Length: 450
Image 1 (cartoon, rainbow, N blue to C red):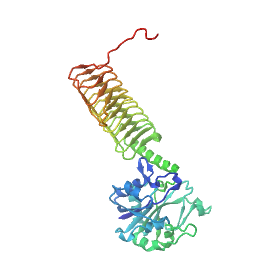
Image 2: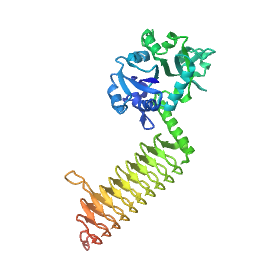
Image 3: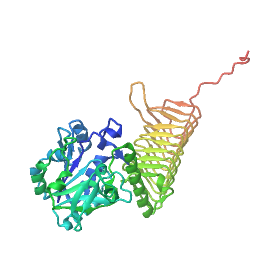
Image 4: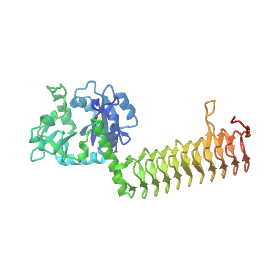
């Protein structure tokens, strides 16, 4: 088993942001949460330490408060990666092995952790550095190995000779140590004569000839130090999800413009047009068509629904065969039962639309219950917010016909099969089968033009 140490104390000045670097999001999840999640989901990891700085410890504690395996320790001074590891109480670690990695490598997954540890155990050396082979290694540090795959030297790019720059095996910054050896050697690391900082790479020299190399997948090398690198990581995650969806029978029109967060669940025969954003705990049932520009977060979309272009759905629940949009906005706690139609420029909030209800045009429905087969005319508004700053409910019964430009002054209840005349302002309950007319009498003034 492993104990994971994640180094997250860096300020990230090159990110050009006031936000702590590891709290920048990749496809909706912060980098530190992505890494911690990968560790937690791996059966190889027993416990997790996150090394924070005095400046970001509180924000990291807040971000990771639900992670029971995590302990946050503070590196009081920014004196390098080896010094960060020294901030961890190594004598309290109960596992035989320790994984150390930076908190700005957000593409690692639980399967990677398991595979790396499995390869480490086959390595027959107590300590290992994870490398990967890149066709264009660019600015990464290079790893030099001997014929037995033992690590002989880590060469920083700026110090590499022309021959060393031709090496394709690069340093990911992920280490696996035998705990006892790490504990004995970490205090022997000497500060750099240039920066006066203590670096983990010095352990390679201190622990020779007991250091091997594990070759991992190329995405493990992707560290985030700039906004550009952050967006590259995000593109990788989205495109990987798009490929997964295609393999599961989802019709992704354009994988390069498909923005579905990893945890979102879609069933077969869902169709995604370009530019769709699906996030949070969203799920979409089979046979649903989602058109371009739609944004759905933390919502359940039932099967055979049709979400039309540029609609927004948040924290809502839709049953089967619903039609929404184009350009509709379903806000928090909207529920649509089966075969409901919500049309263009309709906004809803905290409302229930029962089976086969319709609201086709330019309306606001908030804190309301709309009965089965009710037809809500264009320009309808439920006036739910009163002068006392409280919200009140509107209840509209089954088979009600609401005329164009009706205003409901809540609280108000409309009985089954009732009708409201166009242009009415309804302030009182309407009984079943009644016609409610609430208009000022029209008066024409002759010759007014003069």
